[in-house]
Length: 141
View (spheres, rainbow, N blue to C red):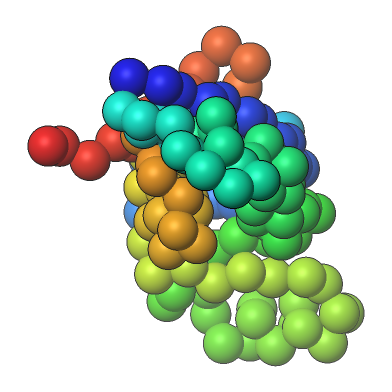
């Protein structure tokens, strides 16, 4: 089995609505996405002969994903009052609403799905919220 790994980082803020702890407050992370693709065989012909995927394409997909989440407030749908959202939008803050609680675990699965939808032969995605702590998502076979 062949595996390729690449990573990208982004800075953003989030909070965990309904959580009984300090992460219930808005706080930031330097997130790191570490993506792994795999294949049992290398491309047999053409310009990508001898490759699992083109590293340039793989890096671009992961970096584009990270860039889209950079310097934003990520919040779970329904977790902010309408007046709060209106005030943030009036100030032109960049916001991303997600349909899940914005935990490292859920981001790992979300990013995995987005990269797989781009046609990458995904094995796993790890999302670090600190240099020492990460969540990993991979599909079961």
